[in-house]
Amino acid sequence: MKLVLPSVEYEQSFRGYLEELKNLGRSKTEMDSERLFKLSKDFDDFTQKLRAGAAGKFLPKGYVPHTMYWLVDGDKFIGGVDIRHTLTPHLLNVGGPIGYAIRPTERKKGYGSNILKLALEKAKELGITKVRITCDTHNIGSTKIIEKNGGVLDDVAETPDGPKRRYWITL
Image (cartoon, rainbow, N blue to C red; front, side, top):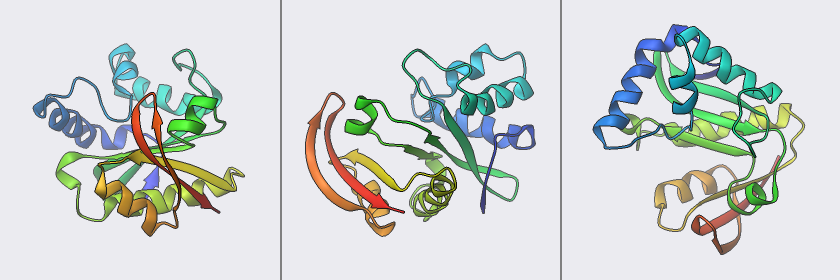
């Protein structure tokens, strides 16, 4: 299991992930990449656009440069993680520099803890020394993942996205 930059090598498995989300009635991927997927001429173009986010390209207004990695196990796409290079006031309040998602059929198998652990290593490589990470107050799985990875609860706050548990992780 490892983090990789988006690649056509995982096209079939990634498309399976999108199908899983569609079958659950979701209209967009949890990694906010559907917009780029629809704008791309083919899968290679899609992965190049995802990679370009690190340079601030192809981002919606208000988004910050970020590096996206995919968690893969062999040739299977398991999930994705965005590591934001800077934070807006909104991200500091609601999200922090790391956002991750695990495909629905692979949840509750330990992948969430692994993707966050690996993402924290990548964040440290980017020079990030303290990570704000949040989760919905009702999301027990995310709470456990964050705390397992060293998250120290700062507070529970009402945010524009609803009530959030807000943690700090020192790298």
